[in-house]
Image (spheres, rainbow, N blue to C red):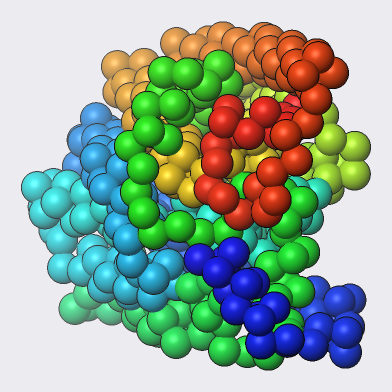
Length: 476
């Protein structure tokens, strides 16, 4: 599709000499990044409203294990729909598809307010997972269409950083709604109604404003479209292809040596994310704080997430070494879990600091997203790589809440020990994966030195996979 667009532009003698590339990059950033950031902000905030509602009264009719199940069942809907939504993203216009899903999950968020039983909440959480499943893979694909590999790390970090913003804003909104008193509707129900309506508005705006790809971007001239496509040629990953190729899926699952190590790194890291997303308010409340103060005290967690994401993604863009930064950013969370496990109950500040440190580990996810995008060529393979990453993300988030069993309350020591073990394994796997990448690149260098380069014209847009294109080199 992109190659044909370039051929047509060349035949029509489209002039790109008058296009200022620096201004074009800013034009694209200012149009796309606010939309992507807002969507990811809402995606995280809306799914974690349950965490804030936990201290606002939603748990009154639930047992502790039922609350854990509500955190888990969201990811069941997510994981089941992930392969399907990844396939649909390739078949349908990406911007429109994403906007429709945002609108639908906004409606589902508002419907939480009508749920007063465990069964109804389970159903609505499944539906929320189904509609939110497209967000991360869609944003990874969009980022790969518009920006080079170093640029992708920064942009991915920028929209992923909205998790921290959502934690801060979510705490503030929850604190405000806790002071809203009504005899007809609980304050947690008002919270869900407000956020649901706001999300629907953003979803409808996304349908109108977000382009499906550079070729269909109405805010760009034809010359600007050509230059934006040429800008990402060096990625050797293409832009978009509507033909689903099963050979790419087979290669990803059975031939790519990077697939399963990256999968298990994601699973192990996201166990911590599942714990933080669903149980941070409950863990903090066990320190003896009031509901209102527990909500406000969660705000620094968002700041830690923002700092960790900036640290990770911007240094990766400048230096590379994704594997090493994954290992480095995991260490503070291991320390945090250790503080929660080892400190006595009266050292509340130290334990609170441990909760904050747990937010470092989930900040590796944008590195994983950009690493998968940078190391995967072939459009079908990229969409399925994203789906597999999100499946791993879901498995980790399903396991995380289930480690916090009611019979272990209020200390939850077995869960804290499990967090230390799983995050330590992330460090080991990341270093091992780095060595695999170095080995594969060295192997390809020897092949090229022996037989020479094939010099295939426009190889960047032929939808070849990274294994088929022997001139492709993996980032580490």
